[in-house]
Amino acid sequence: MAKKSMIEREKKRERLVAQYAAKRAELKEIANDESRPMEERFKARLKLAKLPRNSSATRLHNRCQLTGRPHAYYRKLKVSRIMLRELGSAGQIPGMVKSSW
Picture 1 (cartoon, rainbow, N blue to C red):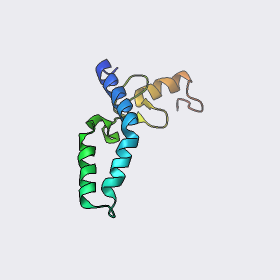
Picture 2 (picture 1 turned 180 degrees about the vertical axis):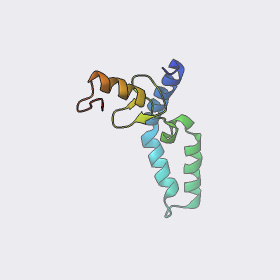
Picture 3 (picture 1 turned 120 degrees about the vertical axis):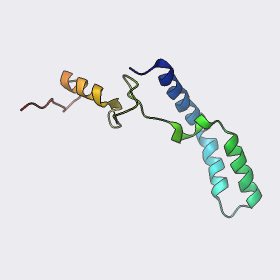
Picture 4 (picture 1 turned 60 degrees about the vertical axis):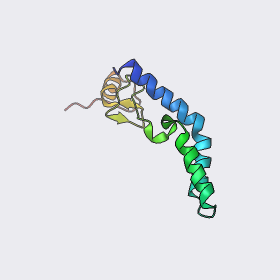
């Protein structure tokens, strides 16, 4: 189980990303538009830099929905490998059976 503070920090980042997504996309579009004047593009870059760092989507890290584990994460199921194995063994994931030979 991951520390509660890390799980909460990640949730806060997700909220910030959602909150600033439209503004960030708009500023990026202005900053990358070659047809606009250089000053306007530079001002857009400065405004982009003033936004909170945690509002950037690249700072998000996938975590297991059940334990908060950041490593060995299965995107399709949103769980870690450990929980995948436990849930699969318990028969809670449709179509998954524990192999035995």
